Amino acid sequence: MNAFNTITRDMTSVFVRIALCAGLFIGCITTNPAHRQGVVLVSTLPDLSGLAWVEGDLFIGVHDAKRNPAKYNWPRVTLLHLPKSEIEGVTWQSIDVTFPGPDGPSSDLESASPIPGGKGFLLAESGQEGEHARRIFHAVYSNGKMNIESFVNWPVPIENVEGIEVCQVGQQLVFMYAERAEGQPSTKLRWAPLSLNPLSFGKFKEVTYKGVDPIGAGVRPISALAADSDGFIYIASAYDSGNDDGPFKSVVWRIGKMIADDKGNPVVELGESKRLATMDGLKVESIAVRETKEGGKQVYVGTDDEHYGGIIRLLPDVT
Image (cartoon, rainbow, N blue to C red; front, top):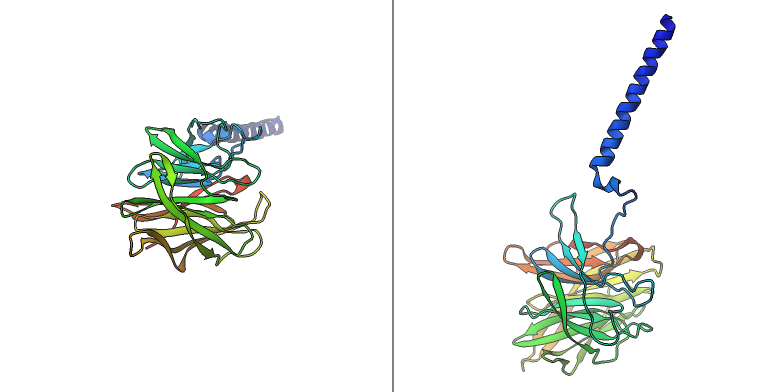
């Protein structure tokens, strides 16, 4: 009888412990929102093929969704807010954009740039062979909505453009772009005067940029492009192994400056490249410069890490 009571007490103690552990486990599940949804993706942010700062902690991201059946309904344009806490992280939401013209939604939208003076944004398709999509859009953002004001086809022959930027030289807006030139030792950086009403481009000039690091097969000498209000030009050079699981590598550089020549015409002056960041394992395809009175110049990069999705990160001080 005593032995029986002892066994009973021991079993009861075990059951109580099991119940307590189960309660704690269930409590963890019910108090952690991530667990309520079952399997949770580490990152749901799509690739950031293009990035442009709007104001405050708000950025516009563009994505290289294609017009094939599998990707037709994928996000094209999103709003991103920088993180406020460890728990929240970067937040983003897709916004509906009506792309005018008979070609329908964008395909392989690879770059975005703010237009100085608060005149909206330019978004550009890459022109990648096989996509049959070679448009540049003038978009205006307001109160969570983006409208396409106008668009034109690329004014010059292109192969695969992953970076555009709009600068201002004097009172003149200047459009700048670069071919990604995958596997080549160099690429062309080209620029021309830009008008908005109607959207049109002047005569293009060019300069050759020779890649520094990384170099070789699978490397894109310029996979992203941006400039700040002083005309300094930032690029990313990226290595893509050709496998959507990686590996990747990127280096972010400051390579020169957009200036006015002695006649006031815009010209790109390349100088000694300054390495700003080396990012092993990541493929940078977008750069945006945030300039505020409080923070000065801040350079943010966005990645297109294929199966891993995208991230946005602030680089160390670039001054």
